[in-house]
Length: 239
Image (cartoon, rainbow, N blue to C red; front, side, top):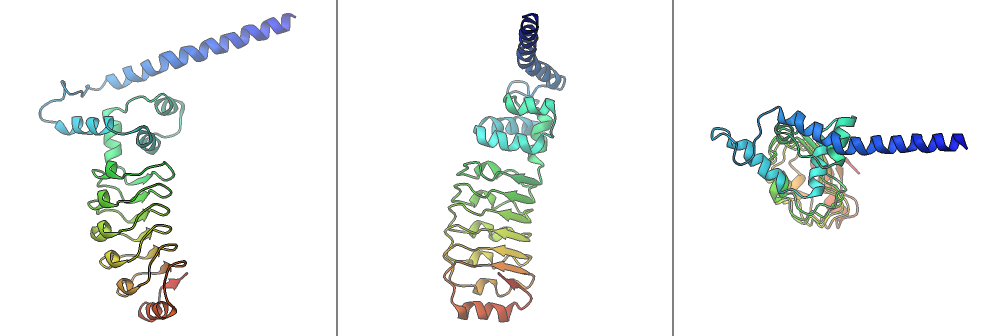
């Protein structure tokens, strides 16, 4: 009987401590962030409007995107766990980290629009596979991209990628792509995975001399088209 009472008391204490942590920890984090100058709309100095622009950009994000970015910039740890799970606002330094990201994984997040990524011009690796994206236009100015994985979306046009001349790896399989003309200028491309589409012509790839791997199965390619590619780019492994 005494043991049961003791266990009940201990359980009650732990429950109370958990409640106190949930209530007070966010306040402690906010105070920690408040040691730095605040940058709301009224307080932003006129000579640093970029801070407010980033803050405004953040406030317009939906919960999916906020979670993606928090996971990208916060390392594992109890403090960051609370920042992510309790939905706390990022500090100005956190926002700076987001805009300087070189790698981002937003795959499998039920995302349909990449407009959020337009200002992230430092990105070199972007994984946005297994979503519902249909338009790559927001990526047009991300000219530092070297690795793009947009597999398993609803993409039919690769035209916005034409300017991404630093691309080394492109994964665009399982989409609705019918031609590869927009890839012609991507002369640094080393790996291209474009299987499970509606492609019937490999001619735009014939001058991609650095191409090492091409996966183009499950398309509408004739054997003649495949043989022509093998002859033009003999060092490329065709999968």
